[in-house]
Image 1: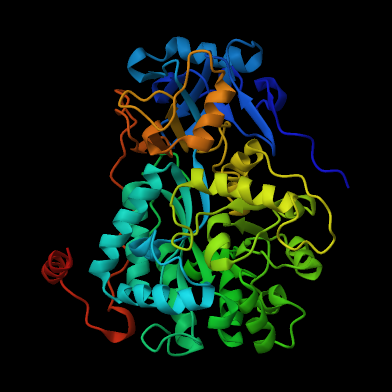
Image 2: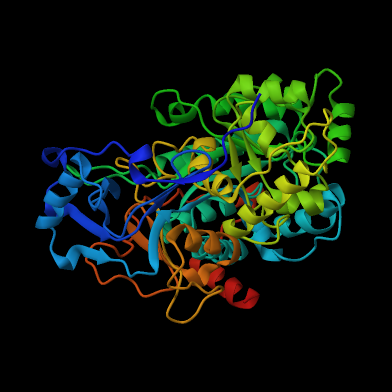
Length: 544
């Protein structure tokens, strides 16, 4: 098998999105126009860069992209865009400067929201010791909903500031705190998969669920609560995809009994049926083959399974909506199971270097037909920035290409290019999360989840962009040396939700107040009395 062709920069018409005709575009009064350079990653290794005559039209009724075109090229898409632009007033037009470009927002395939509390610390131990010393004690604190609210507010804001428009979050075993995370994600306008963690064995006494039956019941109640509380569009209005999708999360096989995993597998196949809708498949998000000691432990506990992944498959947890973080030690049998099941991999290079202690061969996964996303894995990974995840993925791939990682076949693997890594952090990530029809690209019909990047921010940035730099050069500099100072605006579902620059003075771009119903009030986890608002505020003040 030959590796894919070298990544390259391509003209916009090479993978032109399917645009509507002028007659099919929404009325101009519903559109906001962005005029200037746009950048897309339509396929692995391809970077599409428009001219300065690029145009992205957004339907503000549901936050969807109505048209993407480069007017310098001509053709049907340009004709549709020109006709619409002629009717859109300047007050609804955002004109980019010469140093700015639009690009898809980042998709973080794996992050632990509660671990943001100790992000950037405690990276001195291997996985199993790290869990015992740092992770479990911190996550146990989330029995306190006020503490959870403080940490989750900061975590979501940080991920958004770094340009992560979609994030797949682990919460904790506490349903009330997990519901707090759902509300925070909705309030700040991020798109996310959120899951209450399930674990009923091999866990500390103060951070474990009492039985498989009770853990499964709590997971079902969490999923049902999220589904019931999804926003409802006003009568006659166009409904946008919900921001939050509930996920099923067995922490990992060592912390879940076979009975619990089987119950969670069944839950993942119920989906909307829990709230009276048709059966649907929920995302399953967990860990797989991160650390050699972990893999040996699983083999000891599950001699009936052919490999680690087979433990999940036997429980009904390996299917087309499943994605597994790390996957560093997966042999041929395990890789075959993931491919056959339609599952995906989330590559968390930073944490693999440290607590995982292994390298993941992303090129092999891709060549074998398994989709791959990138993840920050906060706090096993030290940064919530997907730019850092991209850089660490490129570094890891170069190490693997030079023989590191103990590849069993001795093959010299071609390293990932930065363009390929950027694809994995955007469109590739959306594919792994099953959101490719919603986000991950600048294309008609998708949600406008995008970043407005400024290579020369007015207050200064992390790198210097010169007038003679090409746009691909500016993008490459941003990928390797940029930070949140260069992310002037972050848009999710057509609304500006974060950004280091001034908000565009355009009607319709501000974050609207969320219209989701409140998740049902309930007693706190494991029977503790629910606190009133005054008590929660007082406790939050004491914590602060």
